[in-house]
View 1 (cartoon, rainbow, N blue to C red):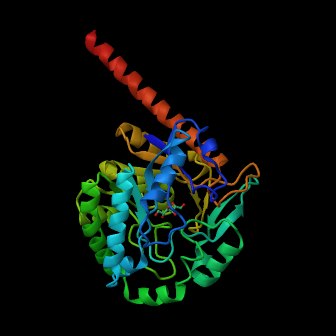
View 2 (tube, protein in one colour; view 1 turned 180 degrees about the vertical axis):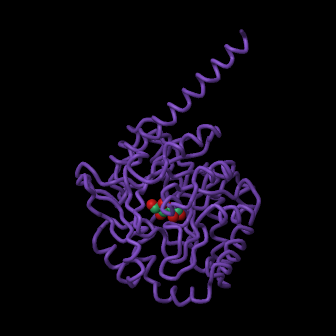
View 3 (cartoon, protein in one colour; view 1 turned 30 degrees about the horizontal axis):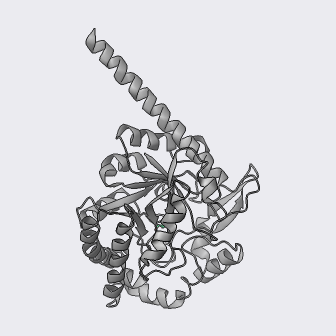
Length: 366
Ligand code: DNO
């Protein structure tokens, strides 16, 4: 397991590379050119600049999250070919700079969604929260307004520029159902996966967060059967998944450990975090510890360890603790605690496995 940490870039993050370097076992950053709107080609000089900044602190830039997919591709519009062309050139430039994994998603209009960014928890910390009933009753425009008003540091995926076309997009998606979205995804993959293959890149789609339809928009990367269907769309090692335990784990019917066993050789990147799902379907993000939520984090790490997982892993959203002022979910402290928990589990399972193998060898010699 190769540990990496998300960093939003110079002047765009409260966490510094210097601090990231202090977290044990972190070898690289997970990054993006967040100021470029979806559909723009990433200039090589800008890519190399981030690489240089990270390398100054002994960190690599092998994992990108996200190269966002332009809505015209998801909508299947004739203009998609132009945006696919640019996407391909971005893949090539990233490969040229030594990138190995590109995370992206195929969620219409909105990236991940929450109803409250700073929900007070019983321990006094705050965390991201999703209230099912509220999202069903709310007008998406109002949600965008409250989210952006309540935080000067927006959630990635909710940048005001990106959402400025909201009315137009809702109108356009009226004719795109789940099957149409699958077709548009296949078209995109058929164009980009061969390029990724040639350039030694693994594309890793992020599941939908939460893994169900919101605001009547289709969502298809929601569970084990759909992920299997996704992998079969283009059967290539370059066509992979970012297995996100928090996104998929928001639906308690999702068996994460079964997914890891089934898909492990197509998981170049994993996000590990915990959520606590309530009986009514609401969920709140918690500390990474298994006992603190409804996702079996220890089981997840154990499965990866048993399978000899050698992909990239990052802790995911954390609570806001110790008075830290940070991007929602992306503070330093709770994510660093998360990493130490993940390493603790990993090292312990690894030790137990090594000890068991050693005693088996001893038995065999006797
Ligand atoms: C939220 C993230 C998502 C993720 C994208 C990947 O914190 O997990 O914004 O980066 O969906 O494309």
